[in-house]
Length: 98
Length: 297
Image 1 (cartoon, rainbow over the protein chains, first blue to last red):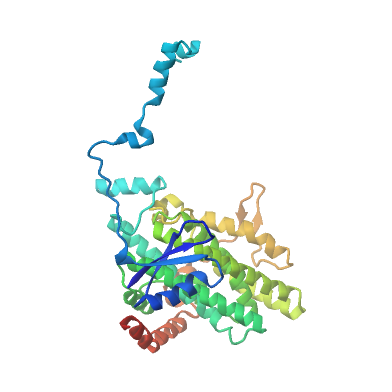
Image 2 (spheres, rainbow over the protein chains, first blue to last red):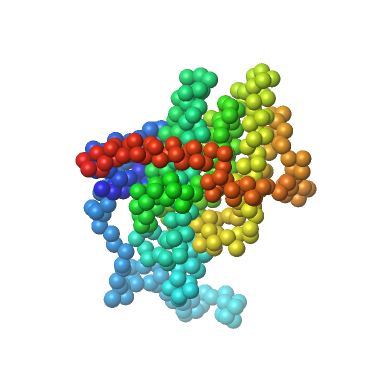
């Protein structure tokens, strides 16, 4: 059985993927992970996750083009220019299109 | 090269990284397996020259420190072999290929350790040369390998400290102790200069093209010389190369390393190659029941 090992280096930090190990069961994995990732006190905590238990998502559909939820979904620059033009607050160089 | 492979190559050449679950071009996968497997083999075989000295270490502290180093290196081998397994090569096959000589391990682990001076030089300078290569792997295009390299580099830094401490203890000791260090340095200098490989340009190095390595061989060697020759000199040791000098523009010049020796050694013709492989084969057989029992649990 393959266990993915996630390691937290300091309290409050995220658990980051640190490697994997093969063990027949959780008890073996526990003993091995302590030795491999904690024997110098370098870890605050470890998460051992059987690889099969990891539900992966890597495909991202966007059928409805929901770009208003993203930073690239807004054309602020063009709109701001139009608004300032209307308000008469554009600088001379900006008006000439520089 | 098909369009999909070309796209992948451009992606990693621009600094992109791949995961185990991504589609990988077959050529890239094979190159990764070859490179990473040799690294794992080197960690596993690299403990044998040092292991001999656990029984002969001069003090209890040194014995414990050396045992800890051996444990670290075997731990590295375990992590690295796991990465290769995920690329599709079973561990049994890797051990079989190691023992039959089909796969390789680094040149420096084919030599004998004559004295405690050799143990110090290995831990200090061989590990220093290795950490230069390994730090460059932190940027490897294959992310699972790059990630485990953090732990490996961190632990290697202890080994350099341990090695330097061993060397400093001897260099502040008797004339006979100082002589042991100089003799060991004389023995190891040739293999150390061969360690980073022949100076082909990185663009011609397939391992660089696929961004498995992030630096060329000569860059690594120059970094080693720049970092460590001054440290060797300041202890009053002599580097056994009359042509070694640093030019005004900061480039190190040196005698041509013996590339024929490198080739001969890594293909299994080094002074200890066959002994060490026989040792590994014997222990694999002897400990088979442990693996069988554990994995059947």
